[in-house]
Length: 337
Image 1 (cartoon, rainbow, N blue to C red):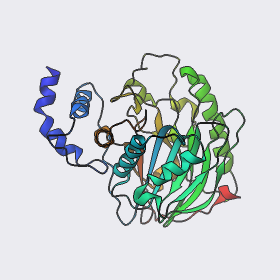
Image 2 (image 1 turned 90 degrees about the horizontal axis):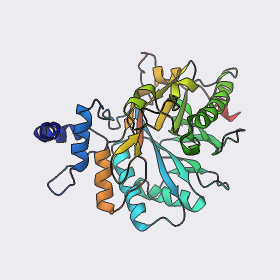
Image 3 (image 1 turned 90 degrees about the vertical axis):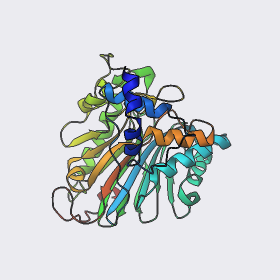
């Protein structure tokens, strides 16, 4: 019965998908499996990803994607899937930032750079290779100034977070790309690492005259309270919510499952943006998972899966007045000191 209702609402759904990031027309040749799955998810209580606005004169976009141990041996098909997927995730964006996880080495970082819009031309790459095959990286498109960047070698954190302070128009903030340890699903290990990262962030925010705007993007292997309800691991009592490790002043965004199960479909809510209250009240517009239909279409064209995660996207204001009604203004690169 649910499938019959999904079929009846297919036409409505297809028009709704056109609101999502970089939406491409879905024609009779497209694989509609993911579309049906999304409709079924709605009946089960899962909400569709929020529409990600196209870039206006005062908007920028931050995309985060775990690209699954991308190294020098990446196949031509995987490169194509990443390029097409990033094209859809970044379509219509103004100034853009990519936070990537599981970049294996320098060759992987260069490979990913070439899959960015215009082949990565005029993009700035920030990456530090380590003996770890799950490094984090940041990429900055035209219109984004990187004030400083580098790895954070924090005790007890397996995969060093990569940090940068950026200036985009009248906005500036500190962004981190992170990948918390999975440890065979042991949430306490992931939570311990997140607490160590949050301790660094709070120390930076406590500096005299500090920039209070922070965005921590990546694969946390932890779910939000709402995201856990939508995940296959919802019955895992030891899988604590990400909110338990944040404390006051920070909010975890993105409730949709993003870790993939098999070729298609999402199983667990692992990928998030953690934003400070100041960033949320001044610059944040919307955040959510990039439409899985869009990624599926890119992968169908490439002939392979891009990653075992779906990307997520955050839209922010870089000028004008923020949600709090105040004019956005520069705070200074305190994390560079």
